[in-house]
Image (cartoon, rainbow, N blue to C red; front, side):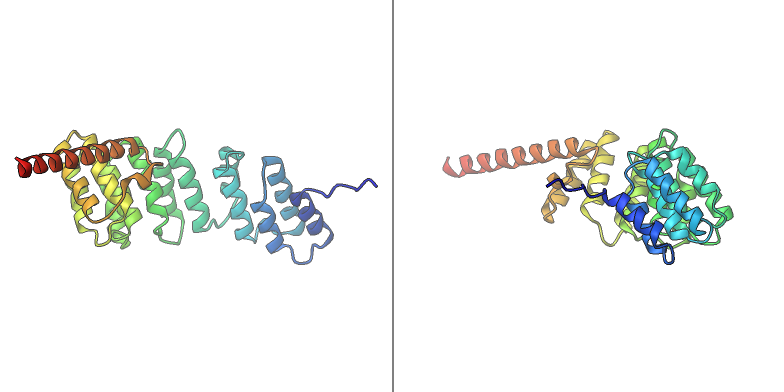
Length: 260
């Protein structure tokens, strides 16, 4: 017997909201998270208009902005239109647009957007804001002392993600001494921070410093090969290979001297 196919999950949930519109807030947020195309997103937006949630449900609306700005199937321009139509954008919305612009063709626009955020938003920037702003500065090879001052002002200098962004910014501008100062002042350094500092030295032709720091990183048990997704991973793997070869050579010479 022929069975009628079930509607796709997105359509199924959309039909549920349409037939049960009394408590749509949670369902609309879930529906926004399940979007796979801009046409589906616009259906959710239409549902929000019908149910009166477009103007007073920032959480569900923020999911629309996130999909438009960050998804491979989204539309950054539409995300911007959604954002400017919001009367009181929350921190998540601001961070989403900053993040999208930091990864886009004009990373400096993320910095300009951050400045606009400081002027318009009553909320202070959070620890999730600065990594995106600093990434934009690093990509654009822009100066970052003013952003660094903001990091210090709001007390995020000890956050490893923020510190990593500062290290990347300063090493891109060949200000390796400033980057190393941030590295040394950080109480808890993860593998990403160590790798960024090593790569910063190497990219500024400071091979000896890169190798010394790399040796320290390996000596405390960190494995750089776990970071194969980083842009500088090939450099780190080369250092790892060189380090292994160097140790093998020294070990061989030591054995030869003992046997001789």
